Amino acid sequence: MKDKATEVAMKRYDRRAFVYDFMEGFGERWRFGRWRKMQWNKVEGRNILEVGVGTGKNFPYYPAGAEITAIDFSDKMLARARSKAQKQGVKVRLLQMDAQKLEFADNSFDTVVGTFVFCSVPDPVLGLKEVERVVKPGGKVLLLEHVLAANRTLASLMNLVNPVVVRVMGANINRRTVENVARASLTVEHVTDLAAGIFKLIEARKR
Ligand SMILES: C[S@@+](CC[C@H](N)C(=O)[O-])C[C@H]1O[C@@H](n2cnc3c(N)ncnc32)[C@H](O)[C@@H]1O
Image (cartoon, rainbow, N blue to C red):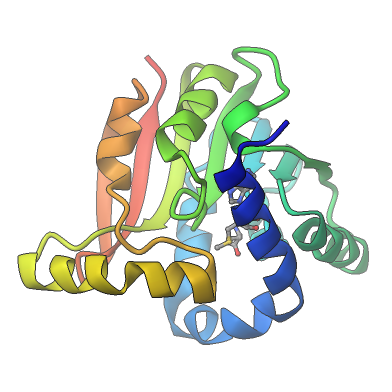
């Protein structure tokens, strides 16, 4: 049984699935593609979990020889990912699952990856606690995220327009994901500021 906020968020992505790749096209051509590559180059080990796989935009960057499981709560996003995986010949186990309630045993994965996901998970700390639970001790967590700007004026503006952005895009633009990672008991090892103090590559590890 899903809570109301999760149900609403899931349906939002179901509705956007058919336009998602088009909507994100600009970002992809701008810098996202380069950042995805940077993120996946940092993956460690063989047993990898991708949380919030969406339509499978990370498929081209999956490391050869890795055993990858990828989850998303939106059926419609997953359907797109499935067809893309088939067309591109990508070996990945795709499962419908809520990041806030992962159906994996503790200490299952060498690395957990999420790209632009914890901006839309309804309870991000709960989701990150689940990530912490399923990654192996000493295992790596790699998150590419946009976060609330440190600049006060920009942050106020982001807070102001956030409700509209959530409705249109499905993502919150005012999340404090670096702090949330620490709140989930993961050790933040490195944060790379990729653009405007908003786009970050967060590298964390389970103790
Ligand atoms: C902005 S999209 C990013 C998709 C993909 N990672 C990418 O880089 O294009 C966010 C994705 O996270 C998924 N998502 C959000 N909350 C989730 C949750 N609680 N459990 C599983 N997936 C979730 C959405 O369905 C959506 O596919």
